[in-house]
Image: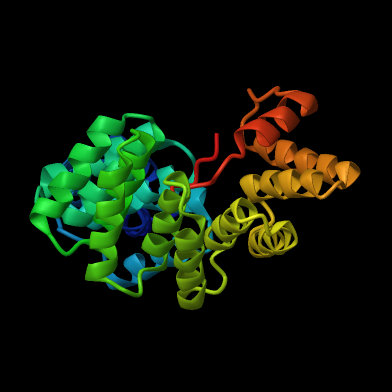
Length: 324
């Protein structure tokens, strides 16, 4: 039996409520082809063209998006967010979540675009400025990233993450003393901020203070035992102190907590080479290469080249999640 007009209208309303705008519009237009003056279909088309500007989605939708994010189901999150934002174009939360998802997928230009949309709605959204700074850093727009973190800090001077992330960028710019001051400020604001302790440790390594760096990494691990980056940085400090066996244990711990941590595999390879275990070292370098190649189809670095890169440059991984 052919559905009644009333059934079609109910279906269109249901589709539009789930964010399936095109499907709902198709039904409304089919009804109007048969009944050009149908008031409910005309109102439905108008509603689709001018969606309600509710500030935020429902609590259920918010929890669903957060769940998708924490499960790493980022493509699903973006698809769901795109259907919701049609009905909530003024939602800072939705734009910020989309930015976080795009960043998690390595699509940093799109992340910046969505953070910009959130900030156009609420210029005083400190977390948005900080998140934007992280994405700009990934795009190597370092001065823009510093400016974004500075804006976050002006809005909320006690934003420990913005201070720590600013320190990360300043480190990349070679402004190590300023970077260290930022990490110290983040730790004063939040002494339990493990990432700031780890970042400080990495900076102290750059400043040739491996013992102080080791103490910072230990502090980070006490606060967050499963923090792979801190274990990796601890290994670097131990290596600089000449404690290669202990360094190898730390790199192994980092890989145990995050098997896809390419830098830890590479640093493990350096330690193995220096311990006189070249075959095991090559296996570690191969693991690092496999991870890099999965992340970028353009990476065609030969094993021998990467082997030399690890040996000569002694790469150190920042909390910013970039290695090369």
